[in-house]
Image 1 (cartoon, rainbow, N blue to C red):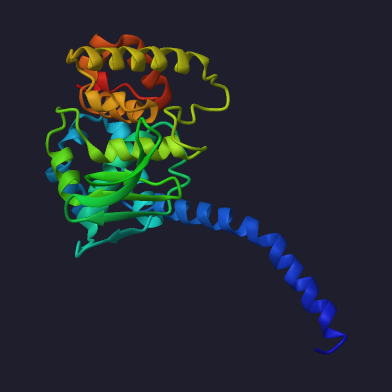
Image 2: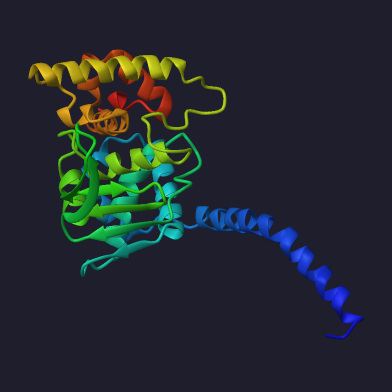
Length: 276
């Protein structure tokens, strides 16, 4: 390399290295501003009317906000088909719309999410489970959804459709897995998603901890309630399960568990019970 040219190239390289961390956010803001100027596609509205009846409850201002979030999600999050699953706008938009319910009035997005993998139906996973004797066992299970801490979220398309079809049954795999994703955005899933810089976790921990303990006691006693027994597995599953109820059966959740509903309302910054 020419001796006179070397310092120039090094200087340019240094400038590029310094500018690169800024270029990403600037480009993202520019792209998002461009998206905001584009109308929500009519074909997408048709898909959502047919596939996601829960959205009919949304007030007009939240529906507009959701449309903008869906456009951003589709533009920024790769959705990849697995095991022969084809990916088209219907798959992308149906998943995005249900996921983005969790972002209404919150701003931001699913910061740690790198990709969404979609299988046609339930998919098999291999887990290592530690038994009460301390011995580890390989366990193979069929799942409808799974969120990995490393940034991948996996869904069964059939379960996505089934969860969206009945907006009042309290079972929605997209809401469940994206609640896990929010929980994982600032560390391992522990049932405590990011609540905001000015919000303490003491009351959240107190209320959800008490509700979780009460659920475990009911499950051990064989007493059924609004919150499914699956939520008693651990604190992370409890948070994901009650998030499903919050969006799909909000009036019942508020009546049966008012303190829990109040905490979720503050975290999600919406009030689905008022949408009915």
